[in-house]
Each structure stands twice: as structure tokens, then as C-alpha cells.
Amino acid sequence: MTVKKLAVFFICVIIACCSCLGCGNDKPENNGTRVVKDAKGYEVKVPAHPMRIVSFSISCDEILLGLVEPERIASVSYLCDDAGISHVVEKSKAVKERIKGTPSVERIMALKPDLVILGDWWTPDSIQTIRDMGISVYVYKTPYTVADIKKTIREIADVVDAKQQGEAVIKEYDAKIAKAQSVIKAANINQQKKVVVMSGHGVIGTKGSLFADICRYAQVDNCMEQLQTGQNTTVSKEFIVQSNSDVIIMPGWNGAPTHTLETEKELLNDKSLQSVKAIQNKNLVTLSGQDMYCVSQYVADSILAIDKLVYPEYFK
Image (cartoon, rainbow, N blue to C red; front, side, top):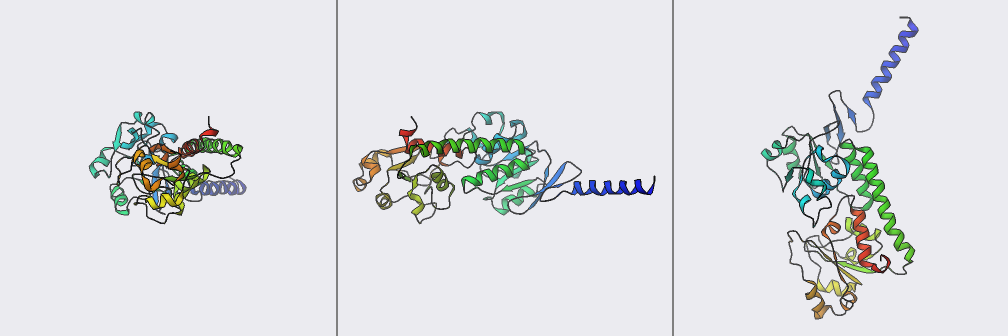
């Protein structure tokens, strides 16, 4: 081999090595795995193409079932089977196993997962317990805005080797939102209707929450953003009177509520609420649990559902 050819050979080797090293957070390895940073900044070794993915929450279930074949999912949460809150009742039937609450070590090991995906609300101790089993655990960031949903989908799509499908899900998500907003825009509404959201799980739609951002996209005036309170309190009658909302939104699914929700009849007959527009006009509407508690690509459907309830005259 001539000196010139030898030099070319070594240059090619160097380029190939640099390509293998890559850049950013992804670090491919030779054994079919790669290292990625999760939302906590933890470097996680994950399979290049995971085939036994375990999800512990309904939001992650819905995202995963939009990205990969059910055959690649070892288990989803038990809420997948509840039509009151799940958008994927039919899709999830192809997944045999279910997770409820915080499963035992034995239960997780029995699933033989090659990847567990958890939201960043899980405690560090719970996450570490699973990692101590030798299982890859990826923690994703909880979305708090409509735009964050897209980031979460991309994040999970990358980890499960489904980037192309992730972009397809996002494209459909954006299209649905744009369609709902175009109807309201065409209606040329002078003043947005004021809404109060009541939930058996406590306050929904306070400032900084995902539901508050959903209301902004639905182009309704969410009175709950003014409420200075924690997430585990209920809406007071004084606040309902003060807000004088045009519409009161009530949940169609309570799950296991921490507070007792007043019925529609009780609200309408409550003497202290008779000055409220929504009570006077009997404008109490029900939003499904699917749409009220959604934290996945189906948030686009939540926006449309709220629009149809608050502005039904434009969606006939």
C-alpha cells in the first residue's frame, strides 16, 4: 500500500469513528443499545429498538399506543380499560398485562421489561428501586402546556425508536387543533365566554396547569386561573358567584374523588348561586373524563370538546 493510499485509509477510519461517536445525548453502542439522557438528566442505557415496554400511567399508555405496535408493549396501566378516562380502550386490548398503582418488584420482574417509562412525578426512590433490578428506566418530563405535549411525544418517540410515527402523531395533533380554532375564529366572537370548571378531584385549570392552557387554545375565559389555591381544594360558592361565569363545566368521570361533587340539580337550586349567569341560563355542561384529565396527543380532542360545549351554536 502506497503512502498516499495509507493516508486515505486512516482518514476514512477516523471519519467512521467520529460517526460512531455521534453527538448530543444519544450515544450508540455496539451491543444494540444506546445511552440517552432523561428528564432528570440521568444517563439511561436503553435498547436501540425496545420490544417489551412497560408504562405505568394512562397518559404514557395513550402516547405509546399512538407510536408503536401493541406487540412491543409488555404492559399498560389498568385505566386503559376505563372508557370514562381512556382514549385507547380498543387499542389497548391487544396488550395483555395491566399495572395498577406501584407494582411490587416481583410483578415488574415477571413482565420481563426491556424498558420502563415513567413520568417525572414518580419519587426518586421508586425509580431507583426499578433501576436496581437491572431494568432500563426512562423518566419523561410532565407536559404543562399544549406545546409541551408535542415535546413529550417527540421525547418518547425517540426513546422507543419511533421518530417517524411521532412526527405523524404530532402532525395530526396540530391539524385537529387548527381545525377547532378556525371555527371559533370564523365566528368572530367579540367576547370569550367565561367558564368555571368543577371537579371531584379538586381544582382544575389553575394558572400554570395544562388544562388552563387547553382553555386558552379553546378560546374560552377560564375563571380558574384567577383562583389562588392548591390543587386539592374544591371551588367555593363565593368564587362561583364572584366569577359570574357563562358556563359551568362538570366532570363526566370522577374515578375515586377526594371530595364530594355537588350534583347539577343541587347547584341549580342553590339560592346563593341564583345571580350567576350559568345558573340562570341552566348552562351546566358535562366534559368527559377523557377530555378533562387528558395529558397526551388527545388534548387536541379536549380543545374541540370544550369548544363544542361552550360555543355549541358554531358546531352544529
